[in-house]
Structures are given as structure tokens and as C-alpha cells.
Image (tube, rainbow, N blue to C red; front, side, top):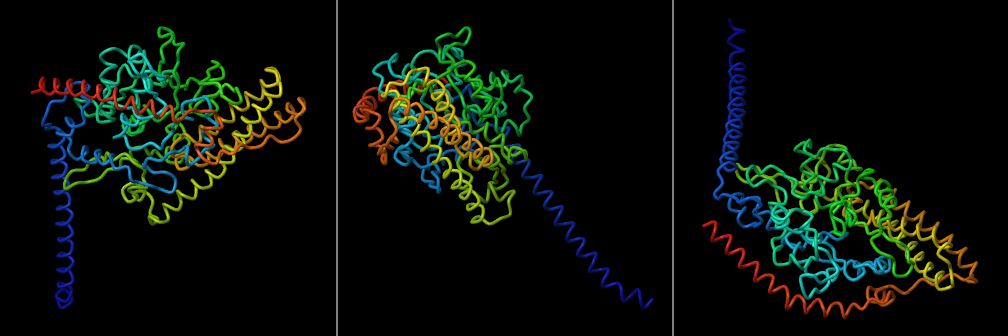
Length: 503
């Protein structure tokens, strides 16, 4: 009897603690249910009816204010990391070797670090690469250049069909493509499900024998990015669209650097002929998704959105942060969800990999610049096309592998091992080209090394390749002052008509 009485206080305290714990857990459960109800009410009670292919960000914002608020932050282009970020940086000034590598191609005129999606239309208009067209059928670039810049593109493609959209020059659609990248690029207007709005990605999967409709939701959180952040070319020989710059992803043989190069070599595709070496060149675009597939994050099932658009909460509402930016801008929300290291350690991990790969990437650039300059010297000395054929092919392939790593935007983070391997191939092929060139030069009586040009600044490099940049800038300024205001005026009238019809 005495033992039972002595144990009662201990038992009572235990029951009290267990009860408190149960109440706490039930409270969390009730809170979670309340939050989910709040999410459901928010998600399924839109304030406005979205029309099909609605391109205007401000209309979507009425239904999805949290997502819209974070998307608006892409207008902030002040993030400067050790290697770029999202600030406006003149990459030709940072690395003048690029001017020589792209001699004879538009990128030698102008190549800026990409800003946020908010500036997609503005930056395309301003670029020297798009020229200064004086009319809708003028200018160097096709309409296809608009494809990844605006939700007006799916709207127009739905109206006229992809092939018709790709026809003609980019200036012809300048007054129609005015809304920067936004909601309708990735979401269905009715269900808000992730949606592929560009046919090139669907066709790219079909070329590999895959059905994109079988993609999981997690895969779709990367595939909507893969509509644009990939390697592509303009196929002007496509059956039924001959002569049209038809946007095509070169994946018929696979998505590796070697597979795509094999594809291009087989169809004998060339973007341009190099102004110095006369090599048949390829310009890699931005194979971010393809290189990401070879990295550890993809292997672990991580999507693009997990790092670049992490989930966050606002009160009881969980939503995706639509400030699409480097994960280094939000390490706690992106990296530290999985990695327990400190912010300083994680930043160091990223920068260490970037620094090492940029070091060897620069070596590849020096080798290939040498090869272009030495090839020109060989031509000037009287080398024949037969003598130069193998050399030009090596230069083409060396620059392909270098550019594949350089243009991948984040490759040193997404897949550092594969990026290093690709750069090593570029260096190897560049050296092989130079060895063959040394023999050709010797055969034509040139025994001394060809001097490396003084290309220490962008201006010097552009002068070296004979590019009239100041003339191009003046023409562009006149275009921006005269033509673009007319585009905006017509676009504003169309927007007003949309609003009137909705009301």
C-alpha cells in the first residue's frame, strides 16, 4: 500500500507530460489542416478568369499574388557573385578572347551576362546582335529569336502555328512580343499545371523516341526550364518548312556533347564560317539542362525549381518562390534544405569548383585563339583547302567542346566532373590542331611562331578582327529611338483592347 502511494506522484507527472505532448501534436495537426484548407481556398478561388494563352503578368498576379510578388523581384539585377550573378556584365570586356573566338558571328559584337527574366524582351531589343532593322523584313535575325523571350510566343503560335511564327525576321513581330517571360510560359491557364508551351521540346523528345507526356511532376519542374535552357539550332531543311528557321533541339543521337556534335557533323550543319581561320563553326547556345542531367543533383532527383525556385511559406500559404535566380541568392531556402554545412562553407564549395574550371577553360580559350590566328597565317602563306581540311575540323570541334562548357550557365556547379572532362577534350583538340598547323606553316616556309595578338581589351580584340562596332552602336541607338516606340504604341493599343473586352 505504501509503495503504491509513493509511486502515484511520479505516475501523475508522467500522465501530465504525455497529455501535454498529445495536445501539442494535435495542435500541430490542426494547424496543418487549417493551412492546407487555406491553400485550397487560395488555389481554387481565382479572382479573375484567365483567357487562353493570357500573356500579361499583371492579370495572373490578381489570382496568384504571392508568386507574382516574388516574380517581380527578378527585376532586381544587383546580385554579383564571384563569377557573374545576374548583374549586367559585358562579358566581351571581361574576356576579350571571346571576340576572336566568335569572329564573323554576332556574339563578337555584343555578349552580356544575362539578367533576370524580367528583362528578356528589353535585352533582346537592345542587343547589337539583333541589329537595327528599319522595317519588318529587315535585320539579321529571324522571328525564331523571340521564342524563349515572352508568353506572347505561345499565344502567337496558337494563333498562326509554329512554322508560320518562325517565318520572317524578328522585327516583323516586334509589336506583338512585348510581355517578358511570365506565368503563361510554364502554366496551364485553367489548372495551373505545369505545361510545355514550346513545340521544340516536345519534338526533341520525339526525336529521342520519348513521350514527354509521361514525365512526372518532379521532372516537369525541370522540363519547363528545358524549353529554353538547352542547345538548339535553326533547321532550314526541315521537310514542309524548307527555308524557315525552324527551332530544333539536336537530340536525335542523345543529349551529350559528343552525341550532339555527331548529329551536327552528320547533317553537315554550320552556324558560320570563322572570319580568321575559315573553319566551319558551331555556336553552342546554353545547354544547361543537358549538362545538369550528368550531375549529382539530377541523379538524386533534384529539379531545377528545387534550387532556383524553392518553396517558401507566407502565413499559412506554402508556395513556390518565383524569383528565378542563382541559389547563392537564397542559400537557406535552396542549399541548406538538404545540406547542413554553413552558408560560408557552401559558398566556398561553389566558388572553388568554379575557379578551378574557369582556370582550365581559359587555357582552352588561349589554345583555340592561337589556332584561329595560326590558321589565318597558314592561309596567307598559301595553304590549300586540302591541307587545311583536317585542321579546320579540329578547330571546329575544339571550340564546340569549349563553348559547350562556357555557355552552359552553371555547368561548374551542375556537373563539375563532366564540365572538366569536356574542357579537357577542347584543350586536347586545340593542341592537336596547332601541331598540324605548325607542320603546314613549316611546309610553306614559316618556321617562327605566329605572334599572339594584343587582345587585352574588348576594343583591341574587335579592332583586330575588323569589326566596326561604333557604327553598329549608332545604328542601334537610332533604331531604339525611332522604331521601338512605335512597337510599344501599337502594343499598348492592343493591351487596352484586351482590357476593354475583358471588362
